[in-house]
Image (cartoon, rainbow, N blue to C red; front, side):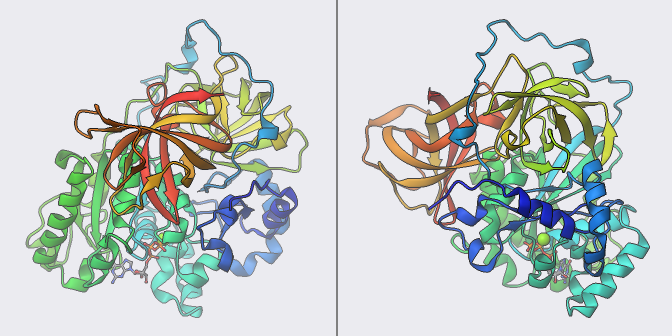
Amino acid sequence: MRLKEQINSADEQKSLKNGSGGSKRCFRGRENNIEDDNCSKDGASDIKSSKVLPKAKPNISEEASSSAKTMEASESLTGMRNDLSLTGQAPNSSNVRNRRPRSESKYKPEEWILPDKESDTLSQLNLAIVGHVDSGKSTLSGRLLHLLGRISQKQMHKYEKEAKLKGKGSFAYAWALDESAEERERGITMTVAVAYFDTKKHRVVLLDSPGHKDFVPNMIAGATQADAAILVLDACAGAFEAGFDNLKGQTREHARVLRGFGVEQVVVAVNKMDTVGYSKDRFDSIKQQVGTFLHSCRFRDSSLIWIPLSSMENQNLVTAPSDSRLSSWYRGPCLLDAIDSLKSPARDFTKPLLMPICDIVRTSKQGQVSAIGKLEAGAVRTGSKILVMPSGDVGTVRSLERDSRACSIARAGDNVAMTLQGIDASQVIAGGVLCHLDFPVLVATRLELTVLVLEGATPILIGSQLEFHVHHAKEAAIVVRIESLLDPKTGEATKMSPRCLTAKQSAILEVSLQGPVCVETFSESRALGRVFLRSLGRTVAMGKVTRVIQH
Ligand code: GTP
Ligand code: MG
């Protein structure tokens, strides 16, 4: 059963102290409490930190001695926003009060809110890296960052030495992203690591997600923020097949989650091509199988870029391949050029501010707290007053940090750490939403959803208990009504009040949530109206909020 667990600030303070380089945090969030999650069994639920970045200095041996520095750095937020976690702290009913009515008047954005095209030459691109466990996501990310000069030669040497010492030599690049001792020990990513680099067109925020099935909720946290994604496949004989397996693999679930969150553009990186001698036949076979599947998830062929590469042997990452076994037949772009060719999506600058809170960092200063997340609409600047939902408290933006650098304005699409002051820090929670004072987000416990039940899912009945996900919030849910089955093509009702829903069926249903969540209908805000239902460690349905019944 899922419990409502408040973030234990004493624990947080302790883990801040134990962290290294000011970038490490360890929250004990609700992952512990997911009924179907194995995480708690092995302690895997500690949600950490990250990452890369010039400023982070992850070094296990330095951890104990760096506590003072860490606190200092934490307060200045350096490196703070470099990780994501679906921490779980969904709004608790005790947090809900003072809901302001929405302003009847139409929102008119002030002039400063609209971006200055002259000075903003690079567009922001939030890029999630997803794929089955061990396909090489972190290695690919680390290698890319190293090639682009985001990880120094010296730092890289250090990772290599330490990884070798621990008998994990092949994980040296992954260590740049897998920063916690447990991740390194187990050789898996557990939370989303965030890093930054630029291409000619984009300021890229890289979200390296976990592939292990126990951490799908954390992967979802990354996917909710993604504008585009790299889906990493392991070309190795047997490994691709395991990852693509309908029941045991994560490739399909990750792709569905991406599509469910509206990600359209995907670079499919067929990694570890060195293990198959850069075989064109292997690449073509993988492309054919995954292509058919992605097509069935409604990804358009024109939005997919297929790239054979080897992170380990540095083939096709930032330059054309040098190995003739690959260059003899591959004529397409290298990974970096493919990323550069992605389109930055249109942003909702002209709507009122909406920022779902992905994570929070409490500092020792009273009345101050930092909220981390992606602005889905509108803009903020330092000094702005903002509404914290679901509590209804009002705070003032003391400082903003984007890409680990201080800035004075953040706009839709930006991934920021926002320090608020003049506020009761306990009211700012992951899963909550920061809003414009006059335009609060809705807070609800009963919703009408239009969903598609995924292939392989167990039937959904009236009374089924599910885990409900919307942006960074998660609540226990019960299906209270199944209104109608829908024709998946036309969307028209084909049967009223069915008793149960089975795989591949579309339906309108009503859920009652154990606690209130900040939510909008999908037509109002895509980011706050997209939902997932999970059960027994699997995503069973996805869809949208079509009506907020009770709030
Ligand atoms: P999770 O985050 O736990 O899902 O794993 P991951 O996808 O991040 O994989 P990771 O980068 O941790 O790499 C897993 C293993 O694959 C490591 O031993 C890497 O050295 C190896 N690996 C990664 N890329 C390549 C490659 O291009 N070729 C070969 N031969 N091995 C690779
Ligand atoms: Mg990884």
